[in-house]
Structures are given as structure tokens and as C-alpha cells.
Length: 313
Length: 283
Image: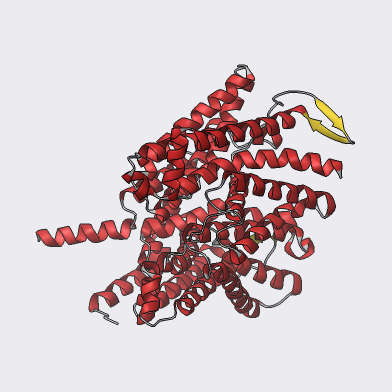
């Protein structure tokens, strides 16, 4: 898989750095980092589906929402223990991933993007109408059991999840499977021409993405303790996930993580100056400029900068 | 029955107008303008600011909204679409970011709360037990007139035919001496004006709030998918299918479910007939 010593060193430094963070920063910052961790998980999930295969999804909250609602309903309404409900949530979300796969077998490009938007809107409206006794209707649910108490524990759980997802995906994407998935994004016909099944590859990508989205969504809801359709199936949420992945660097693993941390902290540091939704003006503006300047993200900017430094040395 | 017919016609006229600008860009520029909803948002607020807050004549407010729409359309084409050189994914993503930025800008200027637009023409007409606000009637008739004008423009004028040519085959159009940049820019300007005017009508139909751009965008998406690209008549027919379906579902099944059926229609049509009901062979 072409592993080098510095790969181990960088991952090791990353994990040790995360483990030491609670000693170094305040509880408030830690809470911000928890959000960044979950956003990173969602961004990685989006990237597996869209960044690799090129099937841009504008409705990723569709998948996250399935996972979140499944575990929330099971634990809150039926008293199912979390150890059982989260795996069920992941499986349900994977079934949801197959639903998203269906149109991807027939349509491409902008048409696929539009249909994912329709999926998100569909589930947003269905959740409020169908069985509001289970889903809590428009107002959602509160009092979903939480897994951890306090910022430090919540941080360790989210960081553990994020690192496991990132590391697993990183290793997986270095195998031939990862190469094949990226090839689907570059040219589907030539993947077929090489005797690989593009359909099967797409299915793998969508299932992987859904599994991560379900896992992240389920743990996220058990961290928040509340769930509401308007907060979840929102175009702003979809926007944040996509931008995190792209700003950081699509088709990489560390890119979405960088993007998630960058965006979360940008949003957090703007809070004192612009308390409300106006923050998105600067947040989106920065994202737009960065994206127009380098569509391949911060990862690429750093890589080119590093290459230049090494070239001089 | 008559009630459904009237409400359906009124709503469909509005939907046809708001979907048309989106279809134009998708047919000719081949890109998805996810910031299309922002034209409606900004158009509605421009009208609100000039006509309702500053007390200018209502027609002047609509005209100003259209002008702002034109400026936005040209700026979007010049600053975002053209530099990205037809990279569809990049255009989709940057327009999505732009839509969120513009929403935030509206929040910054006008605040988060929703505003009620006074009717463009006050008064209500009662017909077959249904209240028809003159405003909605005006919006539907204006939509029809604008659409007929657009159809004649595309069919009969030189620029309109150039737009058709670029939509069919940009390379062939270039060989025939058509400046596709210019055609694209005109299309973006028209699309902006249509969106902004539709925004004034849409806002007077519902209400004015910073998140109002998502609903119309989804309707426009539905109309484009179901109708297929490159057909004004197709857009018109599908806008009526969607509009009537919403009215019928709200009247006979449940008002909360009206969006659900539109989404199901999108999904079924895309899976069964990806080029849409009236679209050209493509994909």
C-alpha cells in the first residue's frame, strides 16, 4: 500500500495531539472541537460518495438523518439499548444509501445532484407528517439518551470516532479499491473498459458513505440529545458538509478533516462580532473565495507550498 | 371542482414563471444555477424595500427588482460561471455557496423575521365559493404575458434564435459566427429578471423571509427534471402538472403532503425516463 515511515509519524502525531488537547484548551473550545469532529466524519462520508465517484450529492443530510432518527426513535420510544440501536441505525442508513444509489445507476452529473436535493426535501416533509407520534413531528424529539457527560468525555468519544473513521478510510483508499473508486469519478466508461463493474464500485462507495453517515449521525444525536427536522434536513447543513470536504480537499482523507476544523473555528471566532445567521456571509464568502482560488482545497495549497519550500531548500 | 381548477391555474402560472429562468440557464448554459432561488429572494426584498418601505409606485418596485435581477445574473455569469470555464460541478458548488452567502446578506440587512408583502392589487374576487385575491390573479396573468413574450423572443428574434442554437450545439453555433459568451450573458440576464419578478409574486403569495429561496428552487428543479431541457412549452406544461398536483393533493389528501408528491414525481420520472417528458435526447 506504499506506507512510509512519515505516514506513521504524521498519524501518530495527529492522534497524540488530539489525545492531549483536553489538557491544553478550555472546555468551551473543546465543545467546538466536538462539533468539528462530527463535521469531519460527515465530510469524509460525503467525500467517499461524491469526492471520489464524482456523483455530487446535495442531500447528504438525508443519510445522516436516517441514522439519527433510527437510533433516536429506537432508544427514546422503544427503550432499546444504545449498543443495539446504533448498529441498527448504521444498517438502516446503508439501506438508505441503496436508495440514493438507484438514480445514480441511470443519471449523472447535474441530474443526480438535483435528485439528491429532492431526496432531502422528501424526507424532511415525510418526517413531519408520517407517524408524528414516533418522530415528534415538526418539533422533533428531545431527551434522547446521551452517551457521555461533560465536554472532555464527549470530546474523547468524538475524537476516537473521527480518528477511527479517518484511519480506516485512509487505509481503504490506499488499496486498489480506492484507486478504482477514484477512477469511476474520472471516467466511468474506461472503468467499464478495464473490465471492472462500475455499478458494483458505485454500490461499494455509496454503502461505505452511508455507513459512515449513519454512524456519525447516530453518535451525533446521542451527543446532542435532541433532534429536529429543520436543523437536520437543512440546505445550510448540507452546504456546511460539502464545503468542509471541498475547502479541505476532496478525494483525500485529511482534507475533509482540515476543512471541518477550519470552518467550525471560523464560525466560532466570528460569533463575538456577528451573533446570528449573518456569520454565514463571511463564512460563505471565505469559502467561495478559497474555492474559486483553489478548487482542490487547502490540502492542495499546503502541498504546493511544501513542494515550493522543499524546492528552495 | 371549479375551485381546484381556479387555484390550480393561478398557482401553475406562478410556477411556470419561476421555473422558466432556471430552465433557460440549464438548457443554454448547461449548468445548474443553485443560486437561482436568490433572485427570488433578492427580488422580493428589493420590491419590499422600494415599494413598501420607501413608498415608491408598485410597478417601479417590480421594475427595480427586475433590474437588480439582471445585474445579479450578469455578475454571476462574469464572476463565477465564466472563470470556472464550464466545470459543472464547480459551478454548482459555487452557486450553492453564493446562495447561502446571499441569504446571510439578506439577514444582515433586513433581519431574520418574516415580512408580509402588501398585495400588489388589493381586493378579493369571490368565484364559486373561492376567494381569489386580485394580487394572485394579477401574478398569474403577468406570468402568462411574460412567458408569451419570452416564447416570441426566443422563436422570432435573432438573439433568441442564437440562444436556441447555443443550446443545441455550442460548437456549431460558434462556427456560424455566434458569440456564445454574449448569448450566455443575455440568457443569465433574462434569467435573473425572470427570477426577481417571480420572487415579487411568490413573496406576495406566501411571505418574505430569508429562507424562502429553497422552496422555489426545489419547484424549479422538479419542473426541469420532469419537463426535460430545451423546451419552453414543456416547462409550461410541467409547471401545470406540478401546480395542479399540489392543489389537488392539498384539497383531497392533506395539505402537508403536497410537497411529497412533487418529490415522488421527480424520482419516478428520473428513474423511468431520465431525459424528462419533453426533453431532447441527452445525458
